[in-house]
Length: 113
Image: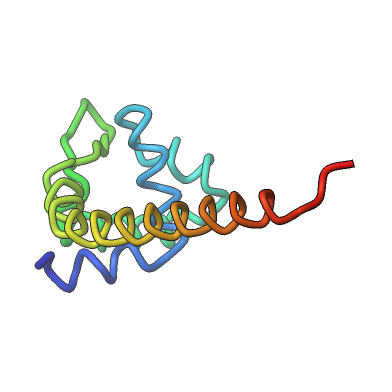
């Protein structure tokens, strides 16, 4: 099961927005601040939570800190969710079959003009 800090990090919409930005490519802090429309201190706090959860990593590039997405925790979460997706897919498939059967039965009972 994924670490609790991962769930906490993903619970906030601002942090999910940062993750979406970093999914495109690594970005310096200033660019993240600008794209998110948050203050620099607020963005830094969100980045700290993401870093502590292992979702992002940072490296120094001259005078800038550049953040990049670390996909390992997302892969762990995906693996944990896989059995639940399978369960729901099976149930939704069964519902689809049931609805198709009901529709077919209703169609055969309807008189033709």
